[in-house]
Image (cartoon, rainbow, N blue to C red; front, top):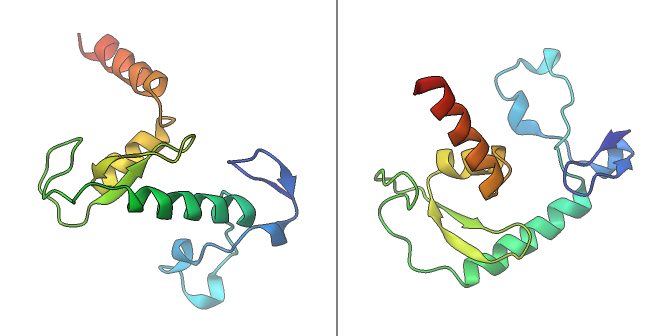
Length: 119
């Protein structure tokens, strides 16, 4: 059994996809099964939401709209609650926002932490 990080429901392992990307560096005989964080049902909803956000995306710029670094591999950033397109980000900024909770509170907490440590 495993708890989906999106819907927070405890489900059997067969409700989750195996995450093969985590295994690519490990020799086949030593590989363990890693399961994705979200269940198949939530993954399907997220995929649909992302397709919809891409439909409403503005033309892709040549720079990340968060860090302003030049990057040709920008990804669509969207609000996970509403599905609304927010902008084009580099992978690092997109993952960073997600890891901080994808909201102002998480970003503000990180900013407060850094201000406290460095000021």
